[in-house]
Length: 233
Image 1 (cartoon, rainbow, N blue to C red):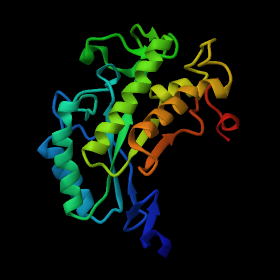
Image 2: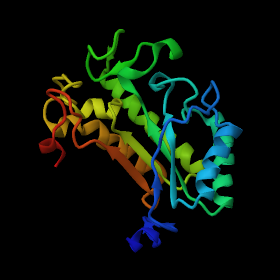
Image 3: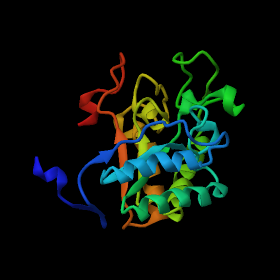
């Protein structure tokens, strides 16, 4: 498969090969979500290993959407300088790096954030209370993704990836197993996908048309009454 070693260009971003290191939770950020030297060192190892593109582990776009401890954050401007240290360290080694933007929705850890998690609907998937999102909440989350993308670009990331998979908030809206709404964000797949499209449009408005924007999304979630292949096609 020689193509794997060939260069490729994606919306102006040239990668030296087609190997992509997918985002994972690394547990190396600070307690406040700040990028640490340990996290920089680990990602630099990946860049030095020759992978064409590193997608950094899921970064929460707002505190209420934080999934767990030592998760990377991109929810406020004060985090940008340390993130810039990360991207510069990768670029010095001729690597490329994207930020993955995430909101965990109902899986936001209330013990960590001190706040009741938000979700498309009340849920039995978690053993604590969940607040059903209002239209204003939806607008706030869309804006949080947009501002996070702008911070990523300012910090020198080569692009962003929207996390709409693995049961996180945007995935929860897509899945009928989580989304029981009867308003414009529920029901048909077009309605359930509306927040994802709004996030994409808000990000694109903030970063411009010539900045790579990826999305990670499930084709199905393997839950009874959940997202299926028909809706994903």
